[in-house]
Image (cartoon, rainbow, N blue to C red; front, side, top):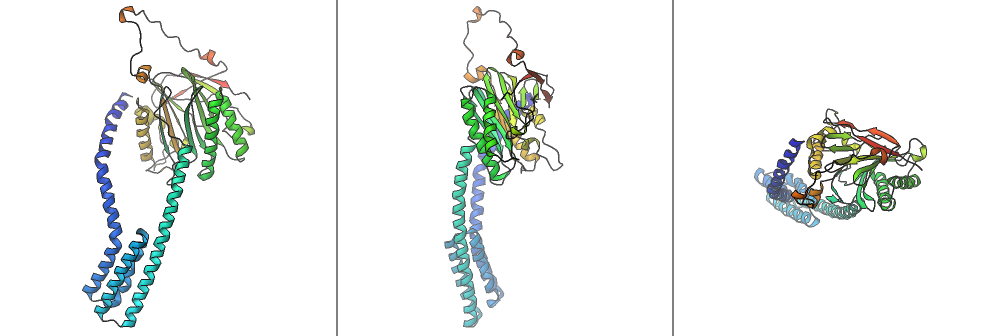
Length: 432
């Protein structure tokens, strides 16, 4: 873990400096490439005319002049297409006169060239109109996506927070995965989920889940009641084969984290001793399938103190395969890259994930990491206390009484990645 901390301290500033130093050059190169592309049709028309003049081909090369306007229709605006077309007609007329072609032949070739120019200009106008409509649609979609997956601040309550999200759909910012984190009168609460299916139906279901969660998280004192409200809403609005896997987490009191896992991949808990998987003692059906029976959700109580971190993610991360069909080892990579900066940790994990799959994910992937810093880190100063001469021997802090917190069911977390000690977690059964 110390190696990972050193790696974070040295790697991220260098990367930022490199981006700042090369950003201007990249932008200038992009501008030069765009200018060359726009000028390419005119260069083609000029090259065809020069070849005709040098080679003495006469009117044989005149049909090649339409290549310039045709290419311009795909990359330029209508006015530029007309300008290149006029250049092609003028050069065609000069070539016809120079070659001594008959008036009828020259008129036929130039008429065909003018017809192609007008057609390509119309095509360019239609393309520009479609691009404007697409830009408007994208702006509306971006606003809707921003409202659905709201940005998560770096600090919420007593926690440092970081989120990384990648949608599998091309040019999409959201998909079937969902997340939300917000402070409530009952402590910080969060949800990470995965909707069955892809496309617009999955986005619609994700919007429904997030809307119900944001309302219920503020209204319901009990975390199980939040899950019940989501379940009832999905039962009314989803089809028989639709469902949502999710983990709902709350921090109702200092030192303890509550979780309700509904068929979702288990979160990873990071402590000084290593990384452990928070397996649930009472596996429950995904949200939306409660009417089919089976085990009902239960609240799982996990000790969560200063310095601990919790990573909640979707199966798009752990099921990502490389070219050798090997899964991405999230637990091992987290144990190696974890640091006191959640954003830095997720930056490295997200880059490694994309490199693992070759740059393109085949499923939506979401990572949400929360860390509880020490009191001195949150306030920026040491807690007030008596002078050193007046200090009395400190009494050892009592061990949290897990049995008193929720005596119904016990379970253990299993270590992954590095070796870690077993710590008990406690589950409280779900009652309707």
